[in-house]
Image 1 (cartoon, helix red, strand yellow):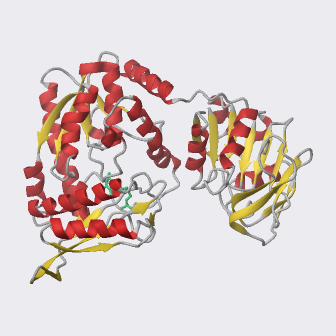
Image 2 (tube, rainbow, N blue to C red):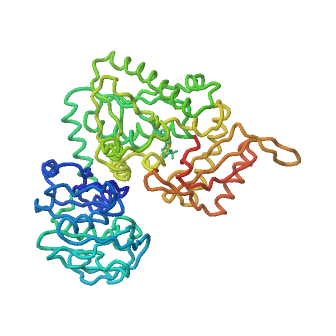
Image 3 (cartoon, rainbow, N blue to C red):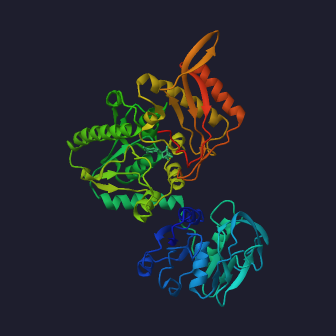
Length: 510
Ligand code: XMP
């Protein structure tokens, strides 16, 4: 295990992912965790993340007491680098000089960290103050025009640090830098997808014993991979429930009912509850209200199914596709504001009296996708872009009706098809298509005046959905989407593009 000590950086998760991309398991721990507790995890190496701009900043978190006495190889990044320097008797100066963004770095001494890398390279900086003097016994290995001490190391003590952010892609050789540290720390690349899948199947087998489990499938990759793992572990003692709330996109219900079952052999109960959800949503336009209703109905339907399944014997376990970022966020206590009450279909309340089985708790999204491939799931499911639990209901601004859902489903299918055809699937994080059902605009089609609705295209790029930018989709692709939607979807006479980043705009419109 490599521990990534989180000083409150949005970069900690990224660091953990990059370490795993080197096939080494990594875990994030808060900087407030006592060193004894960290040592109990038996870490092979420790990485100190970035954090507030400077060790002088108000409330700047200290390095956990005694960390450098443990002898565990440690790598400091940005704030972690400054904190290391300060803790070991070096000097951090309030230079007032800041560096942000791509910055040329001069390697002075290859040492361990820059071994075999070009002496001039671009790195990503984001700092105010700087290390003015390295601690005694450390070699300064790189500098920039503004920062004389941009990297240092003490190979004997197994301590290394860099001022820049090797984890972001804008640092040209960042991944190599991390790899060099991990190698020097003696971490072996054993975190591979096959091992991950096999280990988690084994862990589920141990946890569930000869009990029975149920799982709600949403159509998304997380619940699908979780179910597939549990199916491998306990076979038919798992029953999956798929509540088709009628708010999915074109083809998605079939993906679950037919392709997923064919690929995994999962025992599945399908509930067609579209009418029930539509009825419950009648006359409702408020987004939060929609979310609450969908969540409530979902639980009711699921509870009915649960009772039916229990008729064949007790069920003690509930499978959930919880991912590592959710685990870190709920335990990290950094207090992120609840902007929208996210409702995950499949995200059931815990008072359901089940023990949770969460085989993806240690994984990031990209790892879940690779596990899905390893398990032979349908590609369309594995590579599905994020789709909110409340589905198309929160992409219709206004009341949700069956007819509006049909229009939006068609428009969405066209957008997805054209984006895929243009090879943009992997570049775009997701592209909500939103129907402005409460807005009408005048158009002209053929010889007649039309009075229809606009749809909005909201293609975004993102790393984790916390922040996003609008995707620069080529004009000709946008043009094809627009032409096809206005030609093929009746009632829609206008296609508009959303060019708002997040913040200030969220990804979804509701
Ligand atoms: P926002 O709109 O908050 O979305 O920028 C961030 C990500 O979360 C998805 N999203 C949801 N997912 N239930 C979900 O399971 C929800 O209620 C929900 N609302 C938004 C959204 O698609 C994006 O990926």
